[in-house]
Length: 251
Image 1 (cartoon, rainbow, N blue to C red):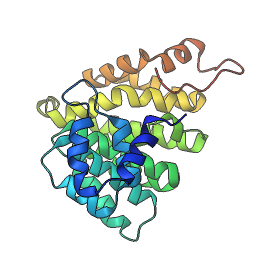
Image 2: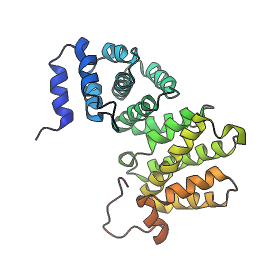
Image 3: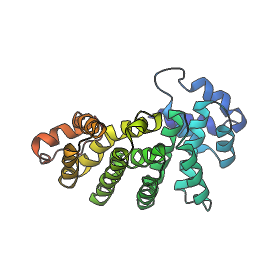
Image 4: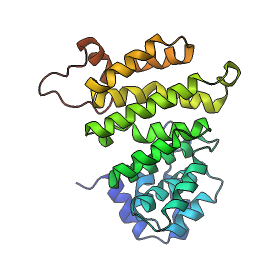
């Protein structure tokens, strides 16, 4: 049975890219609670650099979302312009529109699917960036269950969460309520649980250590992650996953 993404790919393939914007607006799912992610992924699958550029140049948030996601496919393909694409995604990571920022994380996950070490290195670089939204992109991109199937990747994800949390805790109180910092905190409110659940034996000790921090935002991060199903059971069991139990993929 053909899924929605594949159906959209067929439709896009048979259409002039100049007509894509109208089609995307019609089927975006917006305004509404959820944008059409299947269509956006199909655009990323089928588009060319020029079509992504045209979408990004519009003032339509969904079209920009699709174009930015498409940059992830180019990055994953190992294009000779990889450094330039990374720089563009870095810029989009600080966009005021949250959907565009989310497109950056999804684009980077495409890189992770193709070249996980490259994504992990990029995440390590970005988590040291002075801009909280770039740090947010780093942890949101790497803390994806399908990318953390090996202990080395899970360890890197935990390390990214540690650095991002430490950076947040180092900010002065007057900065904590800014939108970019709040977005970073929100991401850390679930990313820790993904990283720890991927390898509980290694991930639980640094997560438990956060409880000793005398910081209200760190306490919030601990509380939010502890409520996630993928982590709550591990906290009770001491990090021992029952024999034969599947690795958690979502709450």
